[in-house]
Length: 109
Length: 122
Image (cartoon, rainbow over all chains, first blue to last red; front, top):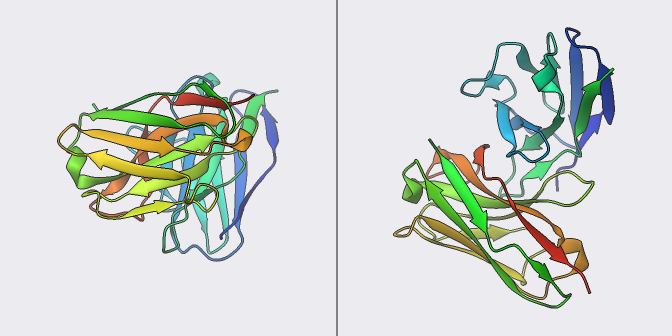
C-alpha cells in the first residue's frame, strides 16, 4: 500500500504569516492527491484536489503544489480560522486503497 | 446543500456487532460512490469501505475485510456499515463520505458528515 508521511507534526505560526506543509508518498501517485482541513467537532473539509485545484469556496490563500511523490500545501497569510489539522490523501491505486497522512496541526504561535 | 448524517454509534464490547447508518440529501445519491472513513483517537483518518454508485461493487480495507460489510439503499438515499467481531482497535469516529466523481470509485472525497462514535471496550 502507498504510505503518506506529513511534516512537520505541529507547525506554530503567527496570524498573517505563511505556512508550508509537506506530504510525501512512498511511490508516485501521479496527480491523485488531495488536502483536507479538520477542526475539532466539525466535518473535515476538502481544500485541494488533483495536487493544486482549489475546491469550491476555498480562499485563494490556500494553494497546492508538487509532483510525483512530494507535495506541499501553502497557506499564504494565516487567518484565525485556519488553525486546524491538515491531512493529505492519495486516490491513486486500483483496487482502491485510499490512504491519508497522519496530519499536521497548525496552531497559534 | 449536500448533507450526510451518520447514526448508530455506541459503546460495544469486543466481539460485538453494530450497524451504522448514513442518511444523504442534497445530491443525486444513486450516482455517486460513498465511503466510510474512520478517525481513531490520536491518529490520522483511515479509509474503511467504499461502495459503487449502484451497489454492485464494494471494497474494504484489509483491517476490516471479512468483519465489515458496506451496503446501500438508493431508494432510501441511505448507506450502511454492518460491523461484526468488533475489536478494541475499531474504536473511532466513523464518517460517511461522498466521492466526487459521478459513477467513479477512484476519486477524492468532496463532502463529509459529522461522524458517529464507535467505542469498543470491555
